[in-house]
Amino acid sequence: MAFSVTACSGGNNNANGSAEKTNNTPSTNTTAEATAAPSTDEPTWKQDTSPITFDWYLNFSWADVKWGDNVVTDYITKKTGVDVNFIIPAGNENEKLNTMMASGSMPDFITLGWYEEAIKKMIKGDLVLPLNELAEQYDPYFLKVADPAKLGWYTQPNGNVYGYPNASSSPADYKKYGEQFTSNQTFVVRKDMYEALGKPDMRTPEGFLNALKLAKEKYPEVNGQPLIPLGLHEFTETGNYSLEGYLQNFLAIPQEKDGKLYDRRQDAEYLNWLKVFRQANQDGLLAKDVFIDKRAQMEEKIAQGRYFAMLYQRTDFEPVNTTLYQKDPNSVYIAVDGPANSAKDAPTLSGPGISGWTVTLISKNVKDKKRAIAFMSYLLSEEGNKDLFLGEKGVTYDTIDGKDQFLPDVLKMLNTDRTTFDQKYGASFRYWMLMDTNMNLAWNPPGAEPNSQMADWTKGKAISMAQYDNLDPDATSKEGIANSKNARLWGKALPKMLMSNSDADFDKVFNDYLKNRGEQDAIDAYRQNAYESNIKKLSSFE
Image 1 (tube, rainbow, N blue to C red):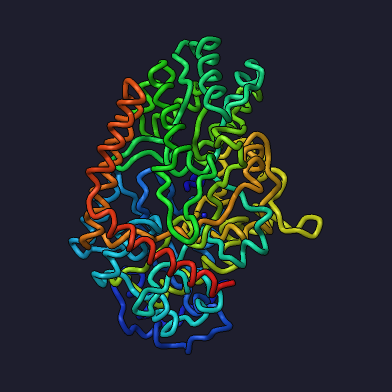
Image 2 (image 1 turned 120 degrees about the vertical axis):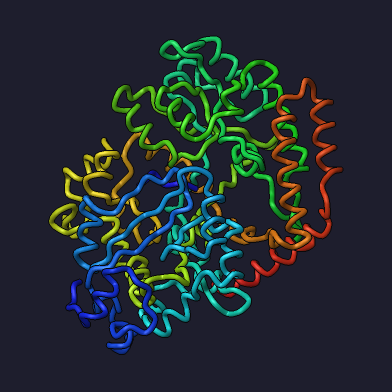
């Protein structure tokens, strides 16, 4: 899940320690680290606000964030003394990260998706430090501001915690905030086209195909370029989000039955809808762009309004949708009821889970252990989250009608020109690495059109799927190697199924995929055990 990119001073305790940190040299037992006794009640970062720069790797090539020259980061640097040098891969993320791990040249902080296999590799290779041990030695305040449930979820078999999540919601969070939770998973249509077609019901296979057909006939071109009837996430070597979890969730296909994990890919309703997409391709309703475009190309075409419908994550294109709204309010994308099962059950969309979206780790090469864990404590605390979200009081926000909220001019820019807002202010999830989306509900302004419509549509449909996280076996194990191979088999089979000339050909490709899967029984057994372990762990947090 991707957010639009857009997440008290003290004296210098020791001149020598300050010089070492400014020069970015690793510290072990520096005088600064050993000076003041750590306190659970007082933020440790206040003990030393001398200048220091941390290198922070973001494992997302699309991330376009820089630290400095905006209100939020300038304020935080002035306050804590910490500057950040973000490192972002120019191409393949895995290649960049694997190279760093192989060389042992790790930056101070690393942020990557919680689901990345590299996390296990870094832990096994002793490339990252246990946050709990850093906290106990240097910053007990971390244990006060960190969520015990999230620490418990990420505790490894050896008893250590190496990463802390953002955008994470525990079972307790669902009880407290659940009614406000939204999902990123949406089926959207271009408003003006959809209304001109009479707002067709696209929940059934017949209605879905007919709507795409009518849209192509009525709007063959958009500003001189061909209409793309349907947009999906990009195809990768392991599949396509839109045609897997998204579609399965819209069809409300269960992930377990009677306590046993269920293979959703073999579900009859799911296969029937994949055949609907096959028929769409045969009828010329799936443009070739769908099979080859990457995210950058898709965003460009969304900005041109070339898609009629999309099964896509809404936050990816919210800034673009705002621009469309400013040009013509009727040309925006809105969420509507999409593909449904034969009973037309409401979708069960993926809401925030305890795994969150990303996790942030501290490497063994960190140049100052104490300053690093203290800075992490600050960022994930209420104070840090507020600074990241609202910025500096009197500059970007103030207490208005008894509530801390953005100043009117700042709010207006947020709702009308996100790009300039990010560059000038850097607030409101711009620096999302340790954002607490539940905590930020206290400061988040009311949703604004056009994007509030999409978010509101998902309310009441978002559920926690945390029990299904982290089920896959270690990639280096026999089951893990087979699982990776099977994933690539699916990645090859899926587009072939859609490009099949008939349903019979579709069935052949799918059955061949099933036959060629290796070690599937062993993989299923591993996943079942992991699932049952997750259930026990989650129940302990309630």
